[in-house]
Image (tube, rainbow, N blue to C red; front, side, top):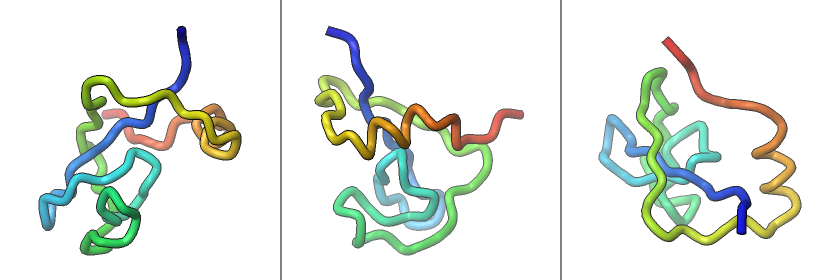
Length: 71
């Protein structure tokens, strides 16, 4: 099966693990982070065995284009 999975990134200010969709630190629950903006150059990663996205809104958002910076 192929599909989309959501990656993660780590906040450079507080070390919280954040959802790939978040442009500021919100933590994995969407509200427990420090609120700092995601810094250019932050590394995204995909934790092993993440479930495929099933929410139509998240899938549409993921397919709307990249939201990261390339050097």
